[in-house]
Image (cartoon, rainbow, N blue to C red; front, side, top):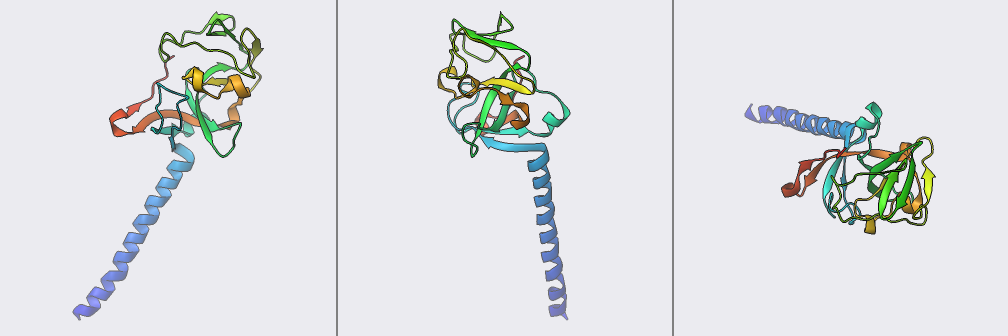
Length: 188
């Protein structure tokens, strides 16, 4: 009789374990595909804000509920290599003119104050898409993005405007390494 009880409990335990596993997988999938997604920072293009090999969570649902803001750090498919993702800061929006002059960024003719997220001695120079002292206007449904490490970033200065539909999400949390964990604040 005891043998029967053990056999009857075993399938129930296995069923409970399988249901728990499937529930956890379903919750993870919903979060991963619709709410937030982890990404690893690869390279120095966002230094000192983000360091190489840090892990960040990116808010996916936030883009559906609200607009991008100047200063948001976004993750998107790299325009130059679709197998990679880039992380950059939103600098300008559709209809705004952007110019790089004397090592500074000018939006609509006014110098952009970037002191809250860049070291004071940071200078921004042109690339193959946007040259120094050239003024361009950002087209509809696009943004202009740049890495915080201006000397070491492949960004809109090199490859052009980023279509807003290509943005995967906005970063909101650095979670690894644990000693560097913090919520991400928009400097504007």
